[in-house]
Image 1 (cartoon, rainbow, N blue to C red):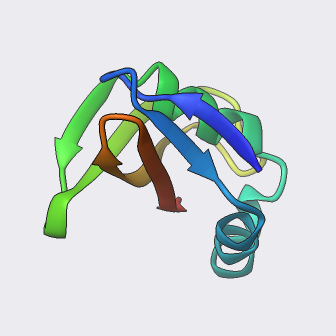
Image 2 (cartoon, helix red, strand yellow; image 1 turned 30 degrees about the horizontal axis):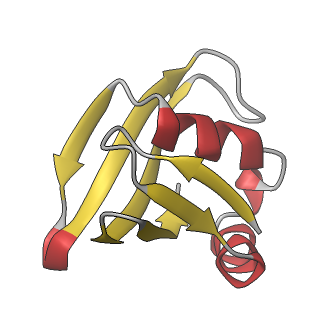
Length: 88
């Protein structure tokens, strides 16, 4: 399990189960775990999603496919706990 702090300083967990979910649904993300964590901790933009989720957005000029925006969706459950839902 990896943990980074969000822009609100909330610890956000990326569990092995969520990582496997991301890679299954988006195989092109298999080498992007550090980029996902960086996007959460240093986003260019944050948008509110559905049901209390937050979407961290950051542009990457080089990815396995092409240049693109990475979006990491997560939830801040409490001031001292949060978790990643998905990323694409």
